[in-house]
Image 1: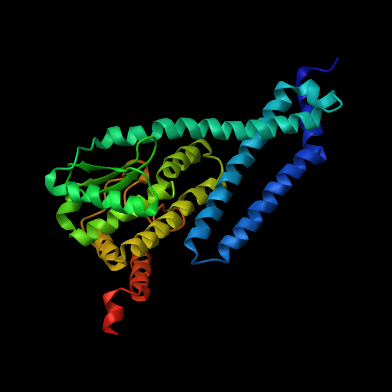
Image 2: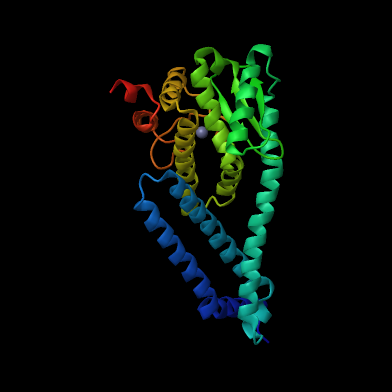
Length: 310
Ligand SMILES: [Zn+2]
């Protein structure tokens, strides 16, 4: 009688030499290749690139969850995989279902608890009378953009912080330090940038992908996709903030002022408007590129002053 180890060995060989699991891997690889190709050939389409990267990131999570569940099934149900007539197809469906379920459960936990952790850490207060205009502005812009009720919270700190926190109750947090250094137009564009993160569900996604990239610490793809998705989402939030407020140049000058003030110390979950680091592993795009894109946008927007002067 074969030992358990031999049966497991046989199950692994049978499983990974069968066409079905290899087909799942091949389809995964081909889709990722296609998404990557479209991504690389669309340098300036921020919206498309965000969707493509999110897809790529999701595929890579599924890929690993599928491989892990497959191996677990080969070990736990070795006899079935190795000898049952439909052993392999059953295990493959199990692995696909298991992969999807694992991703869903992790997402749910992170979505439920990740954001409240951020709020606890910054413990924002209600806006004072002279700060209430920010809430009114957020309500108006939210109405226009179709983003229901977002609460504005003020964080008492000298650091220049602006961030979006998603979850059950959505919040935009701005610090008193930020309000001191920016003029009203600049505050509006920063708040609009954060509202766009909420509209695009970036706040949830950020917490989510951060936790996942820690769980998938061995996955080379997520090391690349996680920061890349964030950089594209920043560009998209910048662009949509500039378009909806009509003041992209104000956002550019706000970013420069915040950078001048010094980078915030590694903000919780990388949610702040500006971050340090550069290159393909940075979660924020280079400041210079962000400012340049905003100034270009300000040139082409019809109502911008530079156009009127031309
Ligand atoms: Zn941002």
